[in-house]
Amino acid sequence: MSDDTDVRHDAPTRRDTLKYGGAVAAGLGLAGCSDFAGQSGEGTPTGTGSYSVTMEPTGTMQFSGPPEEITIYITGYADIVASLGQFDRVLAMNGPENHFPSAYYDRLPGVDIDTESVTDFFPAGSNSADKEIFYEVDPDLNLIDPTVAKHYLGLDDSDITEITENVAPFFGSWMRRPQFSDAYPYYTLYEGTERIAQLFQETARYEALKSVHDELRAEIRRRTPPVEERPSYGYMNVNWWGDFDTAQVMRADAPGYQNKVFRDLELDPSNNAFADIIPDGEWSTRVDFEALLEADPEVILWRNGYNFLTGVDFGGEQLDWKNGIVGQLADDPLGGELRAVQSGRVLPGTATGSGPVTNLFNMEAVAKQLYPDEFGEYEPTRFPAEQSGEKLFDRQRVADIVNGDS
Image 1: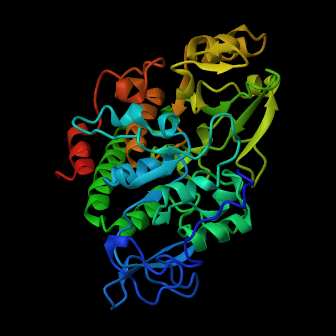
Image 2: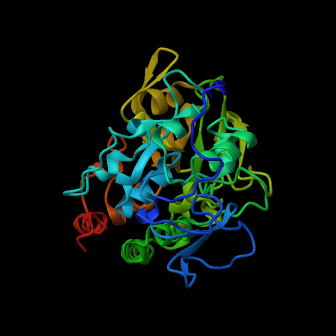
């Protein structure tokens, strides 16, 4: 983050006008923001031509119309905004080339999402965002939870206050996984998407997306084998930056859109080979390979395994799915004994940055990974959107929703 506090701008301490819909919202102190507490409206009209949206922990804001230009943080929000047909409003995010879920949107016929014009919050080689970027892109709203802005963008409380007063307020909620306090409001993906749809006045698009989601989920559940006929599974990964001798094993039913697919598929705890390893109240724990072998799931679902499909550079070594995951497990004296390794059922699991479109493809993919006899064989070296065989949802229907043609 830039420490250059001498270079400031001639903007007023608090903006006098809003760009929301090009209208002036008289009487609102912050840009588009009313009091953050004590309001219960969610996408409800206020009687003055504006409407309010509530999203904890930031609270309730009033808007005179959809924000014309916004910033976001990362993949989940990029997917949500794009699925509602609003990605052209995004001015800046973290790594637009790498963190927009193009592998999924590219498989929707006729959908064209432009990320080249989006500014990267992180200058090359930097581990924190450049605060000046907020001034440079000058959004109407930062669709970013302030907690996330501090935890991931490297801002502090004074930065948040300064940007809110001089540029635009922050509004959002972290929905990816349990990470902050127990009191944190972990919205489900569609609870959060509904609120963002209210912000953009795109409720019809939201309802159409949810219909596709609900139909797909019901179809998969209808065809899923009985619990006693399902394979045991384990959800895990390995820290490639550290010693290759421990694994992180995770609950599949933890809150957050990172694990939504597993809840969609109603994975039963009795089939989770790692259920007895993870301490009560925790969503993950680290174990040695002896514990992995003792649990020995029939299927291993790899957290964010899709990252390796195109190859990942770790310390100068290029790791891909075959060599970086399966190969190293197979070469390990204990890992090689795992029956999932021996049977070829170490599979890429699901993308953790999952908005509505990514979730649809990943529901289809994990159904195939776990139940190939019913849904068709899964090809582990291909992205979910590139799988051959039965398509469990209509790509054209989703494309029409994204494009506003439905």
